Length: 242
Image (cartoon, rainbow, N blue to C red; front, top):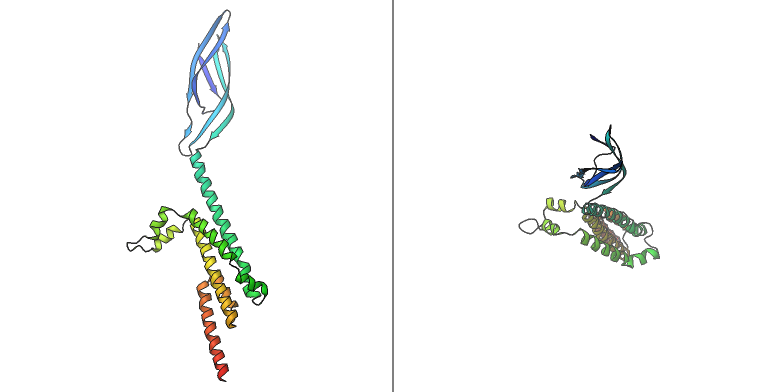
């Protein structure tokens, strides 16, 4: 008497004994056997479990045939691995969103200072501290999310407790850290542009070119304003002399 097994799907996950019983005449014949199989992928740590339907046919001539039919497959992921990927995804999305909306938020102020420097709306906007408060809070939040013990070590990398260029490069490899630095620049640049604009209004100096430079090249904007102010004083002095 022989047994033959045919698997319609492999591999399967079983760890139990199966008994096939048939009644022949007045006697009950049982044929015990066991199926054991493990399917674990160590790379992705994903475990597949199949539920199989079991059907059997027995005869004295052909022996017994067992057919296993899979019904469903369920995948289980490592929860810690999923949480790590979710954290990376959320951090990247947050950094990208902050970068975009932070840039958009300061553009109306530069637009008013350049295209409508003498309007009442521009003057009131320059007197408001709301953009600095909002962007400052956002910067503090991003700094909190991106700060790690590794950050402190990278900032004070040298033996003199001074930052080094290579260490700063590693620190800004994080998108959250880079987004916080971008918000930092937006706040400082806007503050400098407002100072140049107000100084120009008081001293009646042209500031539109200097304010425009402050949007992306703040040090150049400050430099051009200093030059413009010096040239304006020279022109006025010569005018009064004449």
